Amino acid sequence: GRTIGTTTPCASMAARIAHVACCETKAMAKGYVSRGMEHRGKRSWINASGIPLSKNKVVTNHVHSYVSSSNQPLLQRLYACRRAAAAVGEVEDAGVESPWDVEDCRLVLSDGSILRGSAFGAKGTAVGEVVFNTALTGYQEILTDPSYAGQFVVFTQPHIGNTGINMEDMESGTQPLNKKQCHLGGIVVRRLSPLVSNYRSNMTLGEYLEKNNVIGIANVDTRALTRKLREGCQVGCISTDASLTDEELQEKARGWSILGLDLIKTVSTKEVYEWDEGTDG
Image 1 (tube, helix red, strand yellow):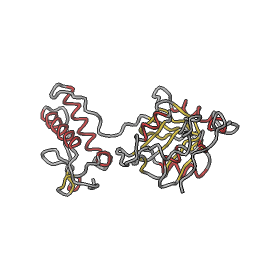
Image 2: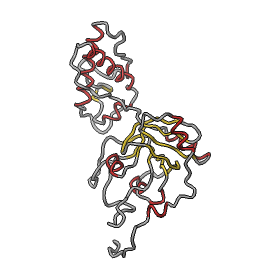
Image 3: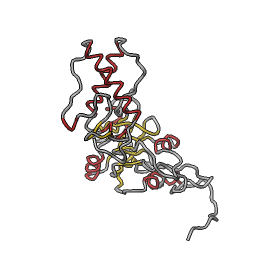
Image 4: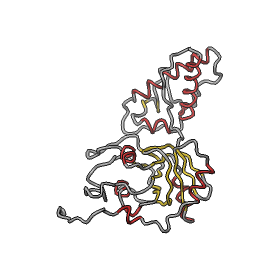
């Protein structure tokens, strides 16, 4: 609920909340729902026009920050009321998307721990050794570091993806003989940035991972996970496949080991080549 960057209204969010609030009013009038919006002083998030407010100012154009703050239960309730009204034909169902992140991905560790979050990047199931990295910057260099082959990297830096991906900062894969760039098996983050702001950016982090067939999971308590990893090595299984049970994913994690894998073969170039580009400075 804090003002971030600017006080310019977020048109899409304001319109969505106003529309959903209207639906809630209709639903309550017809008796379809019994509980309305709560206004608790500083937690009065919308005015009569449905505009987000914070200390009588329009909150923010940072949509993700607004949705993920403590007003999330209110948005969930508004969304449910909007669906209730649409279900009985009081309003046209325009297919309004859920205003909060969906938990459609799981990270299951070999010790049985289950962490649920939101998927980004590629879809599917992958198994690897779970490690953490404490770097505050340079997530792209970590993604393209061949030494992370066969591993899932947990970023302790809570905000990842804000500068996108560019073609100049790759640690590997720039030669035609070795086009594979992202060598790790998956990434785990606390918060995936919904916005990219960098003049060199060519694509978002999610788009890059999808191109390289790497699964990402966001909205995970990376602090708690890191504390667990400091106690001992863990193998994990990341999956977006809802048909697999937690027990099946745990068995996949328990049945995998990084020991004995010839990972050098997977990250090395296929042929010998000469370096003739020189270096700056």
